[in-house]
Length: 466
Image 1: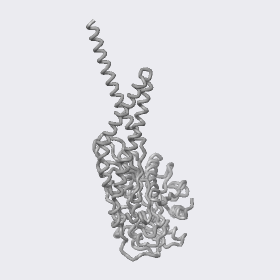
Image 2: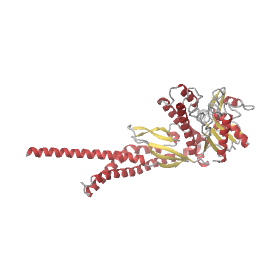
Image 3: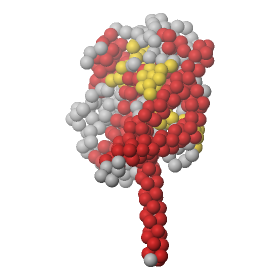
Image 4: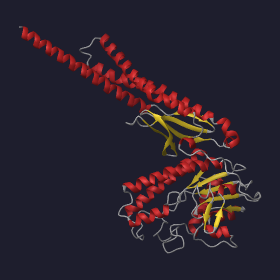
């Protein structure tokens, strides 16, 4: 009899321990699921300062206890230089920029210092607001899960036990959630408060606005073209009486800027240069041949009455030409190493592109700005390109599409126009290509007809035509 009672006691104790463990495991699962639900569904909190609208949210939780946050520029995530404590870190998404004269003034060195604290204040406020909403959504998730469990056990529980279980579980979940916020997310508020610019966060202090290049104003210039070899018209007919800079940069009479000037009877200044990138060409000086050229944007600032600016840049930043050649001689173009390298290059380009768009705000007379996207130089079924199979061409076109997405999103964010010329059915290997062939002076670059197509697309954009 005693043995039976002892056995029952041991069994009862075992069942009690098992129930307790199951209960703890259940509440742990509910806690993790509810916090995960809260982090996933809590919307970005929109804040505005210095003409920038930024969505404040969180990165995906990580296993590390310290690391960078994330800044999303035009769809490209960039790690922050600032490091944050905890597995949950800030994610900032640039969604809009207002570029009027007042905001443009905030970008100049003499006014930015007195106003930049506003951005940090707003980011810190948005971060706190995000977690206020996150706490609410965690509560919703926990109540749903606890309610499901209570409903499943309703035949064995009284309403009082059900209420105590649901409320007690909710308190435990929120206690863990708030504790994690206090331990990890609260430290980020101070870091964000000290942020003066998104450029600073991604590891490169925003440059002061470029001064105009030396030389007299250019009041008679009505439009400006900046960019790389495509904008320069590389491989086209030579200019009449070209300057040494024109020759060094490969500028031609077929360039779309020349055609725009002819149609609109503009005095247009084509500053584009073969080999130009944002850092070495548009925002920084460029050396080509025996010529050292000032930054294109700095020269553009001397055109005090220009009403239009057309920009085509990005291919050289991403090493597009070498990428095509490497793809042609490789077994595959989308191996892991080359894909990671491309994504890294695209992220760096997004950072430099942001800086370029920001500084364009300093151009005089508030001109219309058109960002040219890149045409597709070949169709996926092109059969005249040695080493480039349809699968390889598909990879290259996907990467070109990713570049164009960054260009278009940046233009939209800053309130500029973006244009993609349509070369469909006229790529390399077609009967009437819009691009130069492998035996021409500048393979894959637009020929005279292609330059005309680009000029017409730009003209429609400048006139506001659909």
